[in-house]
Length: 145
Length: 83
Image (cartoon, rainbow over all chains, first blue to last red; front, top):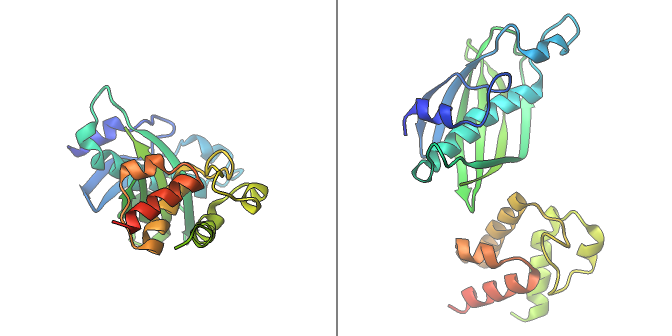
């Protein structure tokens, strides 16, 4: 499955799509990128006059790239325009190291830990443009056709 | 392994994932993982994986589909151990 096809199959859209591109993807993991726009809706409130990307949004970005894109790839034989995957985040453990500001581009690197009985569990990290660690953790979700 | 020993092992495996303490205290062969213990689908997978490790067996999708309560888990584990 092509990288663009995977992004097209994502069940998100503006203002809640946090995937711009997939750099590489395989059975074992995925690397993808997203640039936080200056006018993302949450910057108005997080924080007052001091826009910083919320940790939950960083986690969401890591889940969309690291878990959902990879899950679509792993299920690609069973998917098409009319058959979308059912997805649900089921748990995550995340540590944060650096803030992400508007217009910053982040890279998400995800390694598959296991995919069995529809449960996908990945070790995921996020780097900023200086290749500094922004966040890392473990995310799990259920994915089925 | 007798039934009591098997239930005790299963009880230890499910303990980290249960939501309903009362149902867990009264766990019996008839206890349903989802309806009684309120375990979610992802943790049900964790339980399956923990059962594989504990008993050194390999479970398949059809085993997972059948494993709805303590009794069916006991039956599946017993039949795999005897194979």
